[in-house]
Length: 359
Image (cartoon, rainbow, N blue to C red; front, side, top):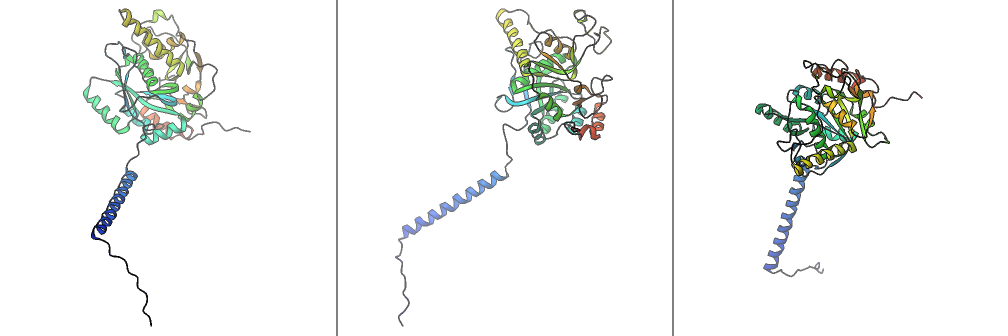
């Protein structure tokens, strides 16, 4: 029988075989490198520069009498660019060095305690939240604050002395810093001793308004404090008469973007006048109390005073937005404990955002 046909291949030269081996080895190395890079990318923490909460430091030049920079702008230091971030509302929770317990209770109740939680809340409500605090010469307190910032990353730090008597200056610095950092429809000043429903606050700020300059809060009038022994004593009472003008309670209020822009612009113009013409700095009048100071500035502007009693509810209801012990305390009495107590109540933490229609 004839033998099966055999196939023969020409013998490759030695140099060709060596080239083939090198090509195969090169491809293998590229494949291994690509696999390693993909594996590293898969397990590497993803950083989103737009969405990550990040504590920022706003530096105001020294010698401005109240925290304002020479040109009216603070230098923003956030480890990256300082492009204004778009949100519907920026909520600055005013706090101090003696309020560690309050911040702890807030992070255990309505304010998330981690960056992912803050991002989720912002996505759900359109509101960004940060604790706002100044500085102190006490090195131990500053060291403790630095640790807290590193752990929670939920602060806006102002280079202004943290002192009760300087709250009006801190408030102005806050609005200037918030405006520099955030392109927001509303800027909300809140204290660290109130129970807040962010979802309902979001709905309130999102309402259609015919007036672009809005001063939103729980409005009040009352007697001017003329007794130096009282906490809210007003040294400039002779300018005010016997009764305060209409203004918002201090624990929480909001200013629309146009109002804050006007504050920043007016402040800047007056500071430039000092640079050009010399002399003492011409500034807004500062009263002893921060809420009265803001209210006085609002009188000078064509703002709409929007009164909303849901911002000063003494108890949780189906419509309450901010709960505090009015009129007994200017906030919650014993806030560290009260915040936890309120959060346990279904009417405070688990009730629907909006009242259900009976129809």
